[in-house]
Image (spheres, rainbow, N blue to C red):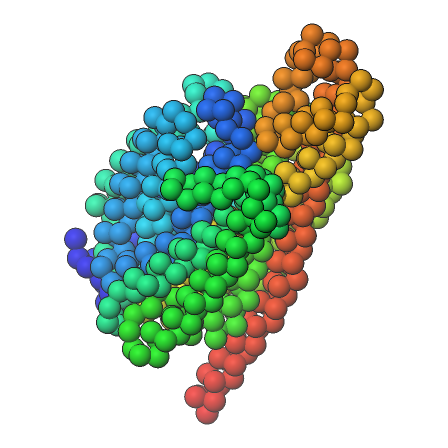
Length: 557
């Protein structure tokens, strides 16, 4: 197959470009679905592999941490060595990680499998977007970006339904095994229809230190957010054991603030190192000059806030639907699929709306709907809320999700030169994935904190339960992610709490529902910050286009 650079698109390679887009979208779907398919199956995985909330958070977020750490480097590698080649290598690694995940017998095996999946996903994601950016031009590029964005939003919303169906019909292992036949089909399609593209601008050297600094910084930062509730935000509350690395429970200071500080230092060092490499004319995995483009810098800030809110929601909501409202995994998947219903409907019409009011304004409308839907949902969540009401609010949220995601990608990259599309798309994907990892970590921490604190308060008012037992039960509520509630409900007065069992179960259900409510409201706050930032994106886009129009007029005079 002919190899292309951005300067040499030919009719021969454009002939099957839409079939190639379909292949890239299918590969992208695998990566996106895997970020959300796990959430609805987490209660089953927790029970089967005996995970605690901490381990469950790692299973849910480590995939995104690895993606965020490696996307910049993989985007640069795709520019240099070929995006189709990197795409296919990524699919193979992702399939291998999926097989290992399905065969996992404990938390360690599953978590390590998620790391391998993340490495594969990090190769696939920027390769898809930069291939689209270098293959499509003019109006076709706008349409292709809209399709890419719709796949991101739609597949993210489909993940929970697919996960619920596979888990309830077969077993949770099938949420990973489903990637194998799809991956094989994607590989065949890539050989047939996806052209090889690369950037003509190859500066010297590979940025190994930049990779190590970014991976270490992102990893330590997210580690601190996830482990904070368990190990302590300042004073040590628990022991840490990571292979040969250990931290005693009686230490004066927890490992968390040290990890957080080290992560920040490494990320600052990463930025300084990238600036130094760029000045010396060597290749850098983060092109800081891209952030001089206002739509790119503001758009990425919006994308980060949106990802934190969206994916934080997908961690806490399945736990609430299954453990508190008592839905099975399939029915919980159907409720969460209400997001997909709204997203697919609005995503399909986003392009037409963008033609009338402009893509930045579509993003504003979408984020407004998302924020409103989550605010209402957070305020109405209780231990006995109507499932239909939850689903209805998720439809509203999904409508906004489809509009915002379908147009945000194109808006962020609209003013980036095609020759650096690999780095531009990888940077945007990194921001999204970092937001995804932070969303799981932040909302998981909020959920853990409030589940314990509210559990202690409400259980303290239940007659017949001692203070020591109150703290123990609150800890179980937090560590089981609400899974202890249905167990106590089934036990009734025959459980370990005797006659106090039903009242304790009710108090714990109320406490966990309140914790979920606060978590959803926290997600809504991040979306609101993204909404505020989207107005700056719109203003920057309007200014750039006005300047271009004035330049065109001056050129004709």
